[in-house]
Amino acid sequence: QVQLVESGGGLVQTGGSLRLSCAASGSIFSINAMGWYRQAPGTKRGLVAAITRGGSTNYAGSVKGRFTISRDNAKNTVYLQMNSLKPEDTGVYYCAADRSWQLSPSDYWGQGTQVTVSS
Image 1 (cartoon, one colour):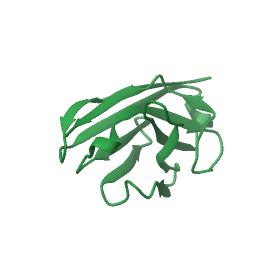
Image 2 (cartoon, one colour; image 1 turned 120 degrees about the vertical axis):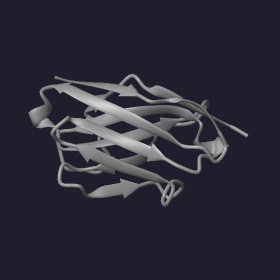
Image 3 (cartoon, one colour; image 1 turned 30 degrees about the vertical axis):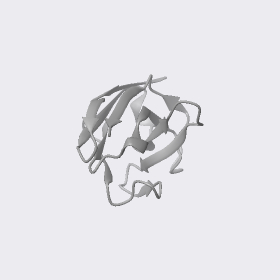
Image 4 (cartoon, helix red, strand yellow; image 1 turned 45 degrees about the vertical axis):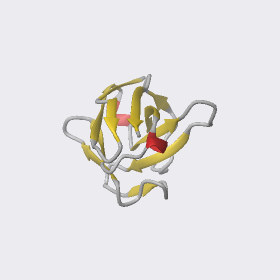
């Protein structure tokens, strides 16, 4: 089993920045892709960004150029640097990990961290 713990959410004004972190523990040797999803009230959870162990990335169109996903394999941690935040970025951000290389990880999930962008 793999456990994922997110941190770094909070309240920020439009145009501000936040950095999310997700630390993995447990059977980490089995993890390949990791990523972040976002769920706003009344909407489906959607992929924000994902990264493989080798560094290949995938971004949702709405965050390209503003968000950067990175990964420290030695620390078993994935990060999401969010800049130029907009109110529509508000939601619960979930970390996910996958045993495959697919850039839409879904085998394991964290409990989520709230990000609120005020206008």
